[in-house]
Amino acid sequence: MAHFDKGPNLVTPFGDLTFLRSTHNYNVESYTLAEADVPTVDVDGSDQKIWYSGTAVAVNTSGASNGKVGPVETGNATGRAPADTGNFKGISMTYVPWQAMRRDIEIGVVYQGVCYLAECYEVDGSGDYVTLTQGVADGMRGTSTLDLLFV
Image 1 (cartoon, rainbow, N blue to C red):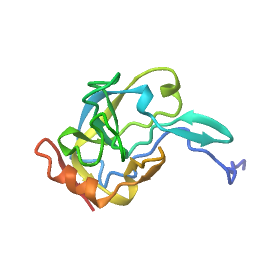
Image 2: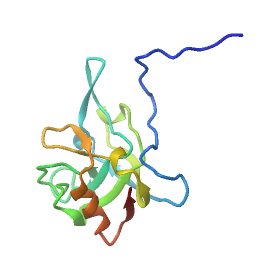
Image 3: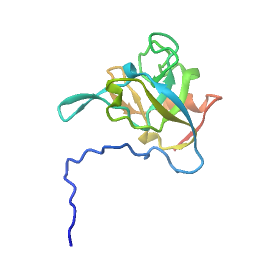
Image 4: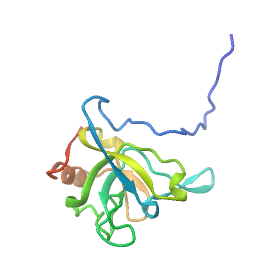
C-alpha cells in the first residue's frame, strides 16, 4: 500500500486555530488589515509579510493606515501600542501567508471567546512576533467591547 511521508522541514501553507480553546461559542468581526503594518518574516531566506492567526489586533487612530487594523506593537505611535487598550479589537483568526506583500487584506477578528495565552502573539519593538504578554491580555479583558478569556 502506498504511503506519504512528510519531510522534517515542512512549512504549513495555511494557518491553524491553535489559539482557540474551543471552536464553539466564539464571535468574529471583520476588519481591514493594513499592508504596511504586517511584520516581515524570513521564510527560507526570503523576506515575506506573514500575518499569523492568534495575533492581537488594534486599530490605527492616525497616520496613513488610519481606521485599518494592525498588530498590537510595542512602541507604536499610531494607536496600536500595548497601553492603547481602547483601540484593541481582539485576536486575529486569519492567517495571511503572502497576500499582504501587495495589498490590504480583510481579516476575521475574534472578539468573544476563550483563547490560549501561550498561542497568541503581539509584535515587539523590533518588529518580531512574540508571545502575548500578560499586560496586553489584561488590557483586552478590561475592554468593554471584548469578551476574551485567556487560559
